[in-house]
Image (tube, rainbow, N blue to C red; front, side, top):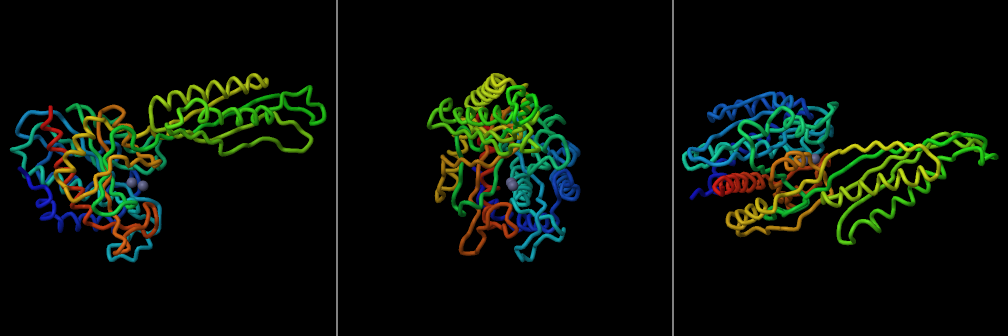
Length: 397
Ligand SMILES: [Zn+2]
Ligand SMILES: [Zn+2]
């Protein structure tokens, strides 16, 4: 029986020095060259089979257990944000205008620590562990897709084929001692839409000879409100927001075109399907009934992160055994988006949260705040739980 907490605590000086080094030298999405270089070097030193350049700056390390079993991927994101740090910490960013303000520095350090723990127990391990150090979680940063999708495109889920996934986030909304592991949807999926309504322009005083896209747009906006109020069950969550409306140039001219943009948010895939279906029907139906030509451009920013019930249930069990003093929250959902959703769409997995704030130490600023910092005790708990959950999941089929 491995004492994960004890081993993670013994490795804490290593974890902390790694985390602080990454914090001092943050790099933006798809520019994690120094970071990825250190990750690769550390994994190679442990004897893992390392592949660089998966998803541009992504790094993958393969650890094969001595006993047969499935392949499990554990994901750690590596990118920082375009924020000027204001923590005043001794390990504050030396890369002006760039900051690890989401805690991904901690995730990388946790990943390397888990690799050390599991490598030392290779003889007892079932299956194969794919350590996935992902670039650009925070956005596309000039590319067509984000880091998670790009790693998938470059084959990270193949050879050996990944059967389960795990990922975590240090969570500053909650204190040290809190752990969030939820079955089903955890984070909302986001879509972005643009609707173009083309009518027939003309004189404001002769509307009968025009097709007015402004009147059509106003009807469309009103009708869209019925999706959340009449098509989605009252206890299900969905948002349909029209956030920009553009049309017209003069008080006496009926314009040719109106353009609407906005966002749709959902957790559940069935709800999403229903909302998108109704969105298309309503915009086309109402817009065309008003005489306009309708064009819809729907872009999926990120799907919802949906945890597999069985895997999440096992992680909950592992967490209860490993951290009996902790508050294991099984209801923690957030409207935040996360691109791990793409991998979890393809392979069943579990995304969990490790409470990381400490109000007494004033380490409780929100993620993405210039004063964001977390209690490094979260690194010990995160590494121990990730290592334990990995071993437990590999054992079970
Ligand atoms: Zn973030
Ligand atoms: Zn983050």
